[in-house]
Length: 372
Image 1: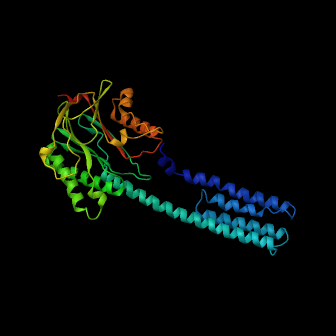
Image 2: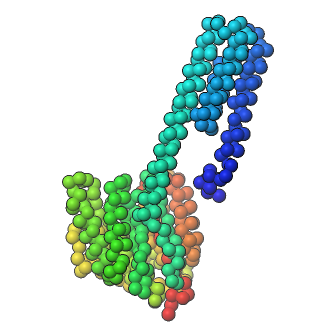
Image 3: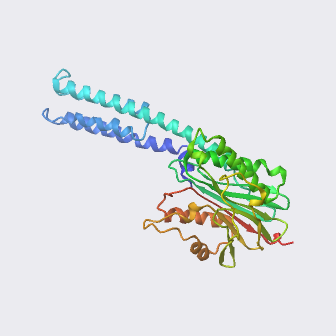
């Protein structure tokens, strides 16, 4: 069960809060009874401040304030039975309890307001992620597809890594890329490239034409924003653009300074290196002649893994890079979804739960129907 499902399950938080509220109430009752039965020289009233403090850890400001009022009422009762309310000691205890209860209730109110703001921010981030990184189709003809995205920024859902897929004649076309840098400028560059990639789908360009279009989109964006954002002006994108054929057992790709795709076949892993990789996108104005297409076999039963360098550059506590090739060889997975789940879990465990860079991966499997 996911954390989100557990938190939002009907009645879950209410049942938990209703059970915990008994703790400060019992505490108030016990302290009051013991203090009343104790000699007048013993004062347990100051311990009543624990009741609203404990309540604030699990309940809202309304319940916290109500418990604070009960605690003050208990302190008044104790004062009346132990020498009267007008004694300096009791007056000081009541005044202190009132002030602390108000402060605790106020802090709980401020915390709830901040949590609501964070929830709104996360909702916006989730919407932005769905716009930038739309879920890839699980099926495309005879192909099965799965993907993952892990952002390095704390509390972030998106970053500078990207992937997208569009249909192409006789193929599904994918791009996986990595924007130089992190933060909002990297997200902006990723948005530009993904938007250009999706917007060009209807033109049915060949891979060199797509690469030229993407490179010039990034370069134009960086050039025109040079005065506004120095980080954007110096940015570039490494990317691999792949046509995975649905009408034949092969793939075609253009590599623009990106880690090579990996092909898993019969328990072996092979990096699909190209003879002449192109420069990263956005370094300069691009032309179709700058990009060379290479073809590789992709037979039924094969699995293709596209990834960003955030995967292979993740480090453990000793500073050792993540051994992706060794992991893939030992797992010998053939299902894209199973591979992505295993990779996500293993990568986060290897890096201690925190990555130093964004990481993305897309896995594609060729079913027997691919061969025609």
